[in-house]
Length: 107
Image 1 (cartoon, one colour):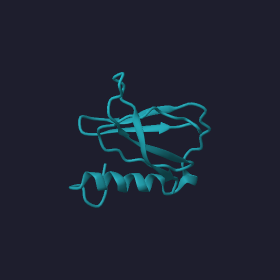
Image 2 (cartoon, rainbow, N blue to C red; image 1 turned 120 degrees about the horizontal axis):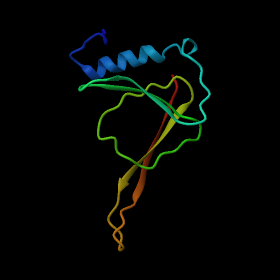
Image 3 (tube, rainbow, N blue to C red; image 1 turned 180 degrees about the vertical axis):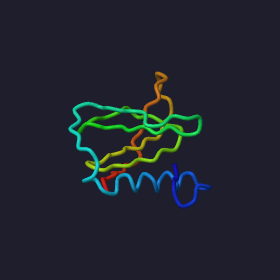
Image 4 (cartoon, rainbow, N blue to C red; image 1 turned 45 degrees about the horizontal axis):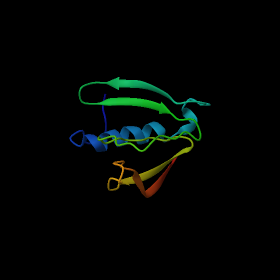
């Protein structure tokens, strides 16, 4: 598979493929998600591509992917909240502190 203009820059090549994939939403299959659905499209030692469908209003606990990700949104949007770990409380519990947010809209 040809990834893009410069395969020596894999992140840019992935972005180019993803941008083309979501650039014409009318040509993509419709969906009416009521629950999260995900499907592995490609798995190799160097790259994993997962199609994830989120239902409106879904939320996740704060988490850290510990890897880069490319996100293509072709309908709806994604609201992200970013957190900072605070100091451990008197009872030894570390609670995340809200730091910032970002909305990723469909293009």
